[in-house]
Image 1 (cartoon, rainbow, N blue to C red):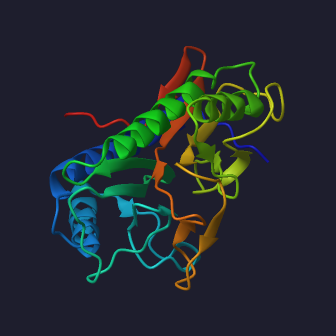
Image 2 (image 1 turned 90 degrees about the vertical axis):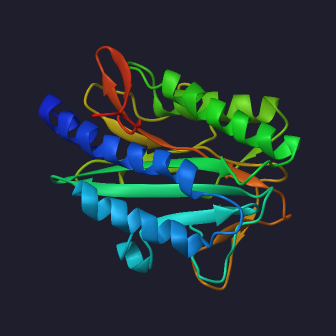
Image 3 (image 1 turned 30 degrees about the vertical axis):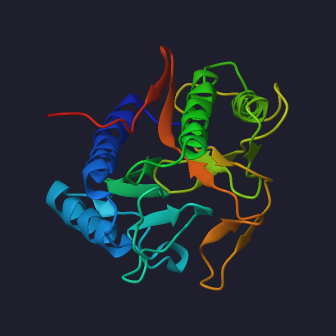
Length: 252
């Protein structure tokens, strides 16, 4: 069942989403060569407490941390660790969700560590642009497949692969709601988009093939061929005025 939100619901998600956006924006200053991924977790926890939100991922289906930190060939769900130190030239995907006044919001960004190679920077650029191609298609009257197709077409036209085993999702009073939002598919397929739907759109893009496997920790998904991967995500509301991004960083 798809739960459409009222204008008041979306206002709350906009407020919580701003906190998510601000925390990820802060990570641009935190992420640097030499720090451990557990330091990113610690800063996320500190900011979550100070901003009055509950980190949504910690304990969700047993996930042990507040934020997912996925480095280089790690696609999603990387677990922060004292033993994992970032090196200059790495890229790091940060995925963070919040629970605020009864609603969830969810966003992700991939950041450079120092100065990555040109190919890594291109992968990040294309993946972020694919996210906005998907968001542009999130309008009343379109279908889920129009979002999916916009992402896939742009990614593959740039020589990369979309990950198919993980998908975006509806979001609201639950972290994961219907409908699923794949990053691949035919235009005109699936649920028709209506005002009040709220979706987490999140392209995961591999530089090589699309296959992934999960490490022995039970969470960290890595590319099967060892190639780099990037991940961007926003929570978006379908409105009469077009797609409204709820998880942008905002001042004030």
